[in-house]
Length: 200
Image (cartoon, rainbow, N blue to C red; front, side):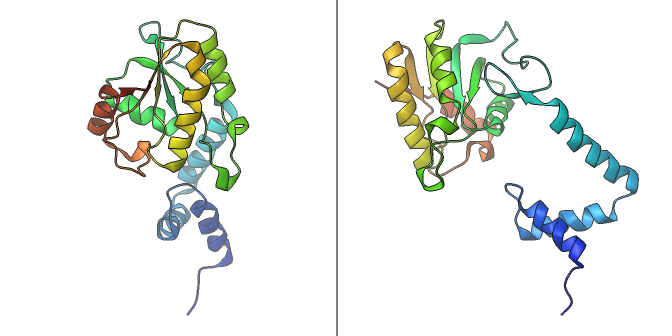
Protein backbone atom coordinates (compact mmCIF):
# COMPACT_ATOMS: atom_id res chain seq x y z
CA UNK A 1 0.00 0.00 0.00
CA UNK A 2 1.39 3.38 -1.03
CA UNK A 3 2.29 5.88 1.66
CA UNK A 4 2.49 9.66 1.57
CA UNK A 5 5.22 11.29 -0.52
CA UNK A 6 8.36 11.99 1.51
CA UNK A 7 7.74 15.76 1.58
CA UNK A 8 4.32 15.28 3.19
CA UNK A 9 5.73 12.70 5.61
CA UNK A 10 8.32 15.28 6.70
CA UNK A 11 5.60 17.89 7.22
CA UNK A 12 3.46 15.44 9.23
CA UNK A 13 6.48 14.55 11.37
CA UNK A 14 7.20 18.21 12.18
CA UNK A 15 3.54 19.02 12.97
CA UNK A 16 3.21 15.96 15.21
CA UNK A 17 6.04 17.36 17.38
CA UNK A 18 3.68 20.14 18.50
CA UNK A 19 2.08 19.56 21.93
CA UNK A 20 -1.37 18.00 21.93
CA UNK A 21 -1.25 16.95 18.27
CA UNK A 22 -1.35 13.23 17.58
CA UNK A 23 -0.44 11.46 14.32
CA UNK A 24 -3.98 11.65 12.85
CA UNK A 25 -4.37 15.35 13.63
CA UNK A 26 -0.90 16.04 12.21
CA UNK A 27 -1.91 14.20 9.05
CA UNK A 28 -5.10 16.27 8.65
CA UNK A 29 -3.28 19.56 9.32
CA UNK A 30 -0.48 18.70 6.86
CA UNK A 31 -2.93 17.79 4.09
CA UNK A 32 -4.92 20.97 4.80
CA UNK A 33 -1.79 23.14 4.56
CA UNK A 34 -0.83 21.49 1.25
CA UNK A 35 -4.30 22.28 -0.16
CA UNK A 36 -4.25 25.94 0.98
CA UNK A 37 -3.81 28.81 -1.49
CA UNK A 38 -0.28 30.21 -1.65
CA UNK A 39 -1.27 33.53 -0.07
CA UNK A 40 -2.82 31.69 2.91
CA UNK A 41 0.33 29.62 3.39
CA UNK A 42 2.44 32.78 3.17
CA UNK A 43 0.17 34.47 5.71
CA UNK A 44 0.56 31.52 8.12
CA UNK A 45 4.35 31.42 7.70
CA UNK A 46 4.62 35.20 8.17
CA UNK A 47 2.47 35.10 11.32
CA UNK A 48 4.77 32.43 12.81
CA UNK A 49 7.89 34.41 11.87
CA UNK A 50 6.43 37.66 13.22
CA UNK A 51 5.48 36.03 16.53
CA UNK A 52 8.93 34.45 16.86
CA UNK A 53 10.69 37.73 16.07
CA UNK A 54 8.59 40.18 18.12
CA UNK A 55 7.43 38.23 21.18
CA UNK A 56 9.61 37.98 24.27
CA UNK A 57 9.21 37.17 27.94
CA UNK A 58 7.93 39.87 30.27
CA UNK A 59 10.84 40.74 32.59
CA UNK A 60 8.52 40.70 35.61
CA UNK A 61 6.22 37.68 35.26
CA UNK A 62 7.67 35.85 32.21
CA UNK A 63 4.42 35.93 30.28
CA UNK A 64 4.78 36.34 26.50
CA UNK A 65 4.45 39.92 25.29
CA UNK A 66 5.27 42.18 22.36
CA UNK A 67 5.71 45.15 24.71
CA UNK A 68 8.44 46.02 27.19
CA UNK A 69 6.24 44.77 30.07
CA UNK A 70 3.12 42.63 29.54
CA UNK A 71 -0.38 44.13 29.76
CA UNK A 72 -1.13 42.33 33.03
CA UNK A 73 1.98 43.56 34.88
CA UNK A 74 1.49 47.12 33.56
CA UNK A 75 -2.20 47.25 34.61
CA UNK A 76 -2.45 49.46 37.71
CA UNK A 77 -6.02 48.24 38.34
CA UNK A 78 -4.84 44.70 39.09
CA UNK A 79 -3.89 43.50 42.57
CA UNK A 80 -0.09 43.38 42.46
CA UNK A 81 0.06 42.04 46.02
CA UNK A 82 -1.33 38.67 44.88
CA UNK A 83 0.76 36.48 42.58
CA UNK A 84 -0.64 33.36 40.94
CA UNK A 85 2.19 30.96 40.01
CA UNK A 86 1.54 28.82 36.93
CA UNK A 87 3.64 26.33 35.00
CA UNK A 88 3.07 27.61 31.46
CA UNK A 89 1.77 30.66 29.60
CA UNK A 90 -1.20 28.55 28.46
CA UNK A 91 -2.20 28.09 32.13
CA UNK A 92 -2.12 31.86 32.63
CA UNK A 93 -4.51 32.40 29.73
CA UNK A 94 -6.79 29.58 30.88
CA UNK A 95 -7.19 31.40 34.21
CA UNK A 96 -7.55 34.79 32.49
CA UNK A 97 -10.45 33.45 30.38
CA UNK A 98 -12.45 33.01 33.58
CA UNK A 99 -12.44 36.80 34.03
CA UNK A 100 -12.51 36.38 37.82
CA UNK A 101 -8.89 36.56 38.93
CA UNK A 102 -7.60 40.15 39.26
CA UNK A 103 -4.12 39.57 40.67
CA UNK A 104 -0.90 39.16 38.70
CA UNK A 105 1.06 36.07 37.63
CA UNK A 106 4.43 34.38 37.59
CA UNK A 107 5.12 31.82 34.86
CA UNK A 108 7.65 29.12 35.80
CA UNK A 109 8.00 27.77 32.23
CA UNK A 110 7.78 24.16 33.34
CA UNK A 111 7.73 22.13 36.52
CA UNK A 112 10.26 20.12 38.49
CA UNK A 113 10.49 16.79 36.68
CA UNK A 114 13.33 14.51 37.87
CA UNK A 115 12.55 11.84 35.26
CA UNK A 116 13.16 14.32 32.43
CA UNK A 117 16.06 16.07 34.19
CA UNK A 118 14.16 19.35 34.73
CA UNK A 119 15.41 20.88 37.96
CA UNK A 120 14.81 24.06 39.96
CA UNK A 121 17.54 25.83 37.98
CA UNK A 122 15.66 25.24 34.72
CA UNK A 123 12.58 27.15 35.94
CA UNK A 124 11.85 30.78 36.83
CA UNK A 125 11.84 30.00 40.57
CA UNK A 126 14.82 32.17 41.53
CA UNK A 127 13.07 35.12 39.87
CA UNK A 128 9.88 34.43 41.86
CA UNK A 129 11.81 34.37 45.13
CA UNK A 130 13.52 37.66 44.22
CA UNK A 131 10.14 39.18 43.37
CA UNK A 132 8.62 38.19 46.73
CA UNK A 133 11.78 39.28 48.58
CA UNK A 134 11.34 42.86 47.29
CA UNK A 135 8.20 43.17 49.43
CA UNK A 136 4.65 44.25 48.68
CA UNK A 137 3.42 40.70 48.08
CA UNK A 138 0.72 39.49 50.48
CA UNK A 139 -0.25 36.18 48.90
CA UNK A 140 1.24 33.66 46.49
CA UNK A 141 -1.30 31.27 44.93
CA UNK A 142 0.40 28.10 43.72
CA UNK A 143 -1.50 26.95 40.62
CA UNK A 144 0.77 24.17 39.41
CA UNK A 145 -1.00 21.21 37.82
CA UNK A 146 -2.54 18.66 40.22
CA UNK A 147 -0.22 15.80 39.34
CA UNK A 148 3.00 14.29 40.70
CA UNK A 149 5.43 16.83 39.23
CA UNK A 150 3.07 19.74 39.91
CA UNK A 151 2.88 18.64 43.56
CA UNK A 152 6.68 18.35 43.83
CA UNK A 153 6.99 21.87 42.42
CA UNK A 154 4.34 23.16 44.83
CA UNK A 155 6.14 21.68 47.84
CA UNK A 156 9.43 23.22 46.77
CA UNK A 157 7.81 26.64 46.28
CA UNK A 158 6.25 26.43 49.76
CA UNK A 159 9.68 25.72 51.24
CA UNK A 160 11.51 28.60 49.54
CA UNK A 161 8.74 31.17 50.04
CA UNK A 162 7.89 30.39 53.67
CA UNK A 163 10.73 32.53 55.17
CA UNK A 164 9.18 35.68 53.66
CA UNK A 165 6.04 35.41 55.78
CA UNK A 166 3.60 35.80 52.89
CA UNK A 167 0.35 33.87 52.72
CA UNK A 168 0.86 30.79 50.53
CA UNK A 169 -2.17 29.02 49.12
CA UNK A 170 -2.77 26.17 46.69
CA UNK A 171 -5.64 26.01 44.23
CA UNK A 172 -8.44 23.75 45.43
CA UNK A 173 -8.19 20.05 44.67
CA UNK A 174 -11.56 20.08 42.90
CA UNK A 175 -9.45 19.78 39.77
CA UNK A 176 -9.24 16.12 38.73
CA UNK A 177 -5.89 14.58 39.69
CA UNK A 178 -3.57 14.45 36.71
CA UNK A 179 -5.41 17.22 34.83
CA UNK A 180 -3.57 19.93 32.90
CA UNK A 181 -4.85 23.38 33.87
CA UNK A 182 -5.11 24.70 30.32
CA UNK A 183 -7.64 21.92 29.52
CA UNK A 184 -9.94 22.73 32.45
CA UNK A 185 -13.16 24.69 31.87
CA UNK A 186 -13.43 28.26 33.19
CA UNK A 187 -16.06 27.49 35.84
CA UNK A 188 -13.89 24.77 37.43
CA UNK A 189 -10.87 27.08 37.37
CA UNK A 190 -12.84 29.91 39.00
CA UNK A 191 -13.92 27.58 41.81
CA UNK A 192 -10.39 26.18 42.20
CA UNK A 193 -9.00 29.68 42.73
CA UNK A 194 -11.87 30.90 44.93
CA UNK A 195 -11.69 27.79 47.12
CA UNK A 196 -7.91 27.83 47.39
CA UNK A 197 -6.51 26.63 50.70
CA UNK A 198 -3.87 28.43 52.70
CA UNK A 199 -0.78 26.31 53.27
CA UNK A 200 0.36 26.50 56.88
